[in-house]
Length: 490
Image (cartoon, rainbow, N blue to C red; front, side, top):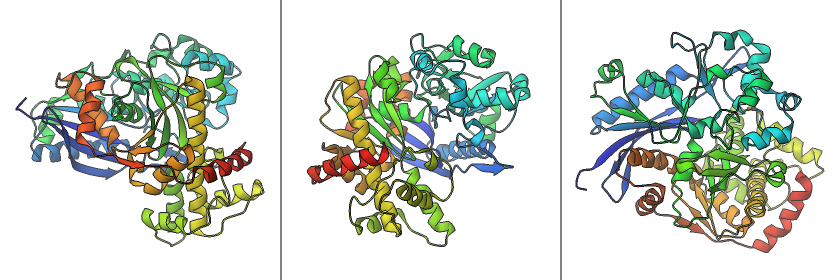
């Protein structure tokens, strides 16, 4: 294959977005970042919104810059899960999409169980319960602002919304749809029972399509505005986690990954969903992936704890880089106190360091006073939480895994990678950092017939990336501290 294939990936995280060109020469994928932009939520009268028009403006900027860098044939878009825009019968946005950290869903999970018992709910969808899931956002709309649903004609999840803005054609991609907790795990279609029992209008939902199967052309207006020839938008795995899983550089059928960013997603890939009492009690999720596979994983609060603490220190007038925070953590004594990273008080924005201190005080532990002490507590607690999740996965699948693949932005966090290896007592293989983008690009290349399937995509990605390996250090000390962590957090 002498001709190089060029595709453009848009990858939106919860704090930034990028446009990255992927250039495939038949053996390796080379990445070229052409545009990076902030993704900052905006709070108005105590509702938190995504600034969706600004983000769409940045997509167009990315297209213009990618053209200047030599152009591309196709576009793929992936974003965070669960959030959506509502479109009216004229094809216009009804209101700005609301952020999953908005408080409108508070307390609604338990309320929903009055209509659908918890076990039944889980057996239908296989998705872990989180207040931010689409189903509870829609239930909140139905309960508090039903007129919004009355005015809406279609619901589009974020990647599908951006694709619709580019092409004028609405579609719903499978991986992002499963994050909603509204898809029937067996039929891979919308679960009528949930819509009916919660009173959510089923008419809002479009037909579900599989990743890599549908492409639509950019509208003539977009082509003219950006000065480009017609290009196709391919529906890749719209959920960034599934794009990242597609790029795990493993040649084994069974592997464990930790996709590390604002959120940590810890899991494995399975041929069939695992839905039983054990996975329900552990609140593990089964998300739809590429080639009909399932991402069997747990959502854990991740680097958000460090990002939001850093923002708080800045609000108090102290500027630290991530490297500074890592160094300060290393100067502190190990294993003095722990938090449960997934305790509800750590989800909202605000003074996170104070909440860490409050948690330590409430649980009768040493209360960290220094910046380094708080960071050490967060780092070690995350590594312990990964160990707990690793144990759960092995218990649910009945399999053992020789290493953990850490992918995503957290690969740059050497301290957390080292601690994860020590805590879980297996080597950590770190890389690629750009797993999500590589998965997005791989599905575009598969749709275009340049790569055969996911197995081949993983080989190509292994060829294209260098991995760093971290071996466990003092695992016996970590194992002893883990028992304390379990006592404190149960």
